[in-house]
Structures are given as structure tokens and as C-alpha cells.
Amino acid sequence: MTLTRSMARFTAGLAGAALLSASLSAQARELSVSTVLPDAFPWGQAAEKWAELVEERSDGELTMRVYPNSQLVSGDQTREFSAMRSGLIDAAVGSTINWSPQVPELNLFSLPFFIPDEAAVDAVTGGKAGEMVFEAIESRGVMPLAWGENGFRQVSNSRGPISEPGDLEGLKIRVVGSPLFQDTFSALDADPTQMSWADAKPALTTGAVDGQENPLSVFDVARIDQVGQEHLTLWNYMNDPLIFAVNQQVWQSLSEEHRTLLRETAVEAGEWEIAMTREEESDRLAAIRERGVTVTELTDAQYQAFVDATRAVYDEWAPRIGEDLVEAAQTAIDAR
Ligand code: X2X
Image (cartoon, rainbow, N blue to C red; front, top):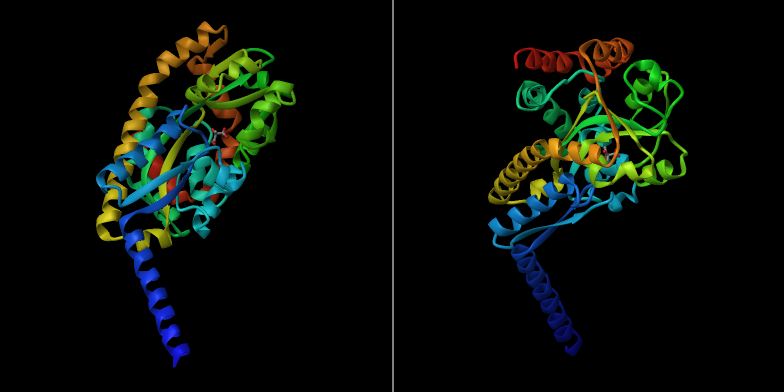
């Protein structure tokens, strides 16, 4: 009798605790958001902006906590997508490069000399090709919501100016751990070395590598000039868009209202960050020049020499990315 009663009380207590935690989670649900770069960079600021907007507009019902420096995947940025897919990470603002090992279609953006300017980026991400890319991400278990931008990637090194493919010969260049980069820099007779961003700056500091490639915002904020990178070539060889995305199970568990909120705020944070990244480029370049970095700009003929030298990479990768997708992107670029 006593036992039954105390068990009944215990069960009631459990039910109460479950109710309490359900109502607590209805009041405030926190999502983890992974990024590679912290908020000193536009990329990290994009994630913080997203978190701010979500918290504000959900009246605190939904909050997002940003974990920068790929810390949720122990610094291994090419594992971010898998971790988000499996639910270890709820959401991310991630780079197309870092997710491309799991989503081959994302290599579209890393095709060398394929997307030449900002208008071309917008034509691709904002049109049919962009939709196809989002479908490819969704079919692999992650819900993509909006675009951001890490920027056009420029090459730097410690040895000398690069204005033609021959200048890269034998240079050890740090690249992200995505196979297409290996192929592009091998085609240019450089010696590409794959490593995470966390390992890149130490490798530049010790001279283990001669060069690297990253957008101007990264070069500027990370003070890459201080680790001997005195020569910078503006070659816009590829753009690295960012994608705001959420794990599918998390997405499915959200109310319609919260889904709309997450998507709208991601779009808004992305547009804000893209505009800021582009606006800041010329001041960043001026600052980099002032610090004594030699900046090389290519003539049309010099640019074409790089296009020709990497043509085989395009031919090899277009089928892996998907001919339909590459064609949709090319059509958008031509019509811009
Ligand atoms: O690792 C890089 O070079 C970085 C920070 O740009 C990316 O995450 C793609």
C-alpha cells in the first residue's frame, strides 16, 4: 500500500518533471551554430547576426549559440557537414569548400576561374544553379536556408610576385582539405599541402609552407602579412560562398513559425554580411598595401594563361559536380 502510494507519487513527480522540462524547452530552445572563423571576421559576424536576429524576433524562445574555430569538430573543418548531418551540431554557417567532400556539387564554386566576378556569384547563387545546389544539400540530410560570402580567394606567398603560372612552380601552398584544390595547384606545378585553418598560420610562421590562398578579409584580419606573406596576387580564381543551414531533425522538430523565422533571419544576416564583405574589400586592400605587401594585379592575357593552365581541372571535375549544374551556372554567368 505504502509502496504503491510512494510509487504513484514518484511517477507523478516524473510526469511533473517532464512537463516542466517540456514547457521550459518550449520557452527557450538553444541551437548550436558552428563556424570556422570567429567574429573578428565577416564570416563569424554573419553567424552572430543570425543569432541576434533569431533571439530578438522569437522573444527569446529560440536562441543560437555560436561555436567558432571549428571547435565542435576539434578544428577539422571538413567534418563540419557530417557532424551537422548526424546531429552533433544543430546548425552552421559553413563554407562551400569545407562541405564539398560530402556534397560534391559544392565543388562548383571551387572550379578554377569559373566564376569571375560578384555579378557572376549572384547570378549563380540566386538562380537555378543555386536552387540545384540547395537541393543537393537537402538530399544529403541538411536543410540549407541562405547564402553568405567568405569572398574571392587570392593567393599569397613569401617568395616572390606571382603573375604567371610558372611563378607557382614548386611553391608549397597550404590548401583546404578538399581534393579539387590539390588538383588545381598541381596543375599549376605548385606543391599543394592540405591542412586545416587551425594549422595554417603556424605552418606559414615556421615556413613549412610558402603560401596560402584566402579572401582579403581573412588575409587582413588574420594579419597574414605578419607571417612572411609579402606577395599577394589578385586573381579571383574562385569565390567561397557561405551557407546557413540546419540539421534536418532539428528543422522537422520546429514549429512552422520558427522555421519561417530561422529562414528569414538567415537570409537577412546573409545579405547583410555579403554587402559588408564586398564594401570593405577596397579598404582592406589599401590597408594590406600600406603594410608593405606587394600586390600583383593580372592583365587579361596573364589571367588567360591561368585559365588555360587549369583547363584540365575543369574538364575532370565538371562531370563529378554534375554537367547539368555546371551548365545551369554557365548559363547564369553568361546572362549576367
Ligand atoms: O580554411 C580556410 O582557408 C578558410 C578559413 O577560408 C575556410 O574555412 C574555407
